[in-house]
Length: 498
Image (cartoon, rainbow, N blue to C red):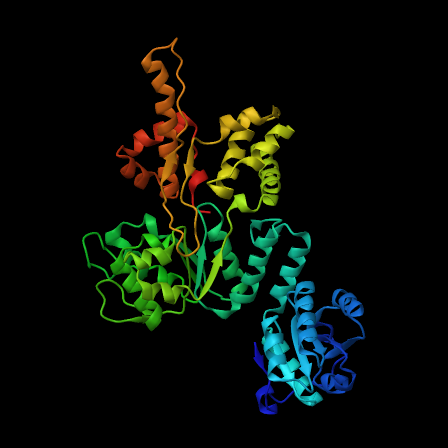
């Protein structure tokens, strides 16, 4: 956002300025309200001009045309800023410019505060035309905007993410706008909200031609982090039988997604900071730095601000990563998505397994809405899969829901600065009940099995479904782990990174 004071040289030669009726004219439509004397100057720039004489007509034309920019004229700064705010609400993806022939600095401030893309002071139509032309030329991602607008009309799907929540669609809109910038992005959100899917959406809208490469930082052994990220030379250490490029170089020209970056050791954090500052990496055992062009997106379910204050995360790296912050709201804060997602998963999984989907009673749906979903969308999908497999073709009630939900709560929730997050899974503190007609062992066995199941699922989730790492964490052999998973009907693919 800025105040225009441009010269003609800033805009290039303006070749083709008189083909306003050509094939691309509709894609460069400007809607002008009260700017009749500037029409000729706008058309000389190759812009197609639609006029409106009232606010209602303006709203109507916003929906009739593929409007790239809206120009509002006025002298009353307060009234004009109100119109800017209304226009931003009505058409959030349309740039709004203000033309104030007799305006003041206060008018500028008010208009920019309400979201104007530019404010043009002074009576010159040519100056206004240059500002509008420059604004539209900056909109280099029109096809992506149009694709987003088409998706938003249905309010359901966006690059693999499914939502009817206004908060989520505001987040998606932000993704569309910031993706082409190439700036680093920090995604905050609880486990299971879809942070990787959001990162993939940023890459999809970025226009970068390289690959999207994802890595779970918490799943890399500490002594191998630098080798995984930056590569190594042959013979550098035992087992390095050949050189390895590393994930930064694999993602060259594309996007590197560092999931759960808060789990990285401090020395590796410094290596990443240096790579971002120098735009180059040095493989382990190497002597030369290799240039890389990588857009880094980091994600975490912990409050990095708190971690930095405690000395557990480098503050300078946090500043480097936290250029654009995207906070994904948990599922419990968008109840309109719960039933929508349940219906989607129910249909998809029943089709996948070729089963008749279960029929939910009102009490079941009420229980879905009343539950706080500590595992978010991933927990809802996993529970729906269990439901389809075990109750296909049946009518399900609240009683079924209570038996299907898992016996733990994820206590770590806050993602805003200062909130503090724990990644522990804590059993519920409900008072246990005992059947005194049975022995102690008969009472304990179901409780032990329930706790063991919960532990194994938590360990699989932490290690993104990898058997070797999960077995090591649990202190059992991979064969024993696989036997237990089969016993409990746990599918490792449910826990692979989304």
